[in-house]
Image 1 (cartoon, rainbow, N blue to C red):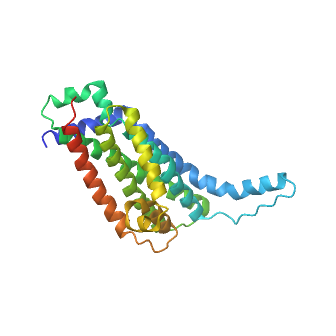
Image 2 (image 1 turned 60 degrees about the vertical axis):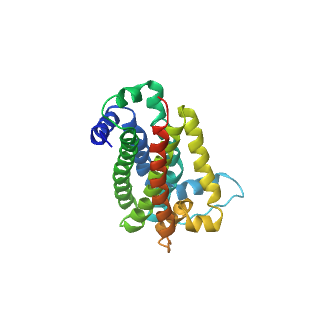
Length: 254
């Protein structure tokens, strides 16, 4: 795979100088900051609403560190994953439509290097932003709720990160296969919601990567996770999709 390191460096430079540095990292930091605050004020807010509505009585226990972490994980599993789909839709198709892919591939950069550099750069950005935002969430949780264990947060976010990286690879496959950004985004959203539906089926939830969300939640609640099969199938699926993305892109006309 000629030109991989050079093209990867180009991708990271582009990330630093364009909107891509702000979208996923910005969302992660936003949820890291707001999740502890929302968890802290929710009981008081519900009590205030209850008092303003005659005959309505809502009582919530005081919020804890677990509520803060749960709010953060919920935001990751919903809003951030959808953002991963949308931002990843143009990873390959965007460069094809703009003509920059042709210009790049006239240089000593193979198509395999092109696709794999896209995956590695996006995954690197996501993982780096996740590490920083998780640290921010943990720090604010300690400041608001006092001493809070880090192990449940680290375990649940680590499992979520595997799910997010898999989605990055899947989106690269769709982006390599579809000529337009909209088509790949639509396919990605369809894949995302299909996995949510399939996860309702217990065997699929237990033995495939669609159960990663459930495993992440159990890790946060410090329950037995049985994470082997969801994690193992996610790794296998990511490798297969990365291989598929390379093969599909090699057959595309630019």
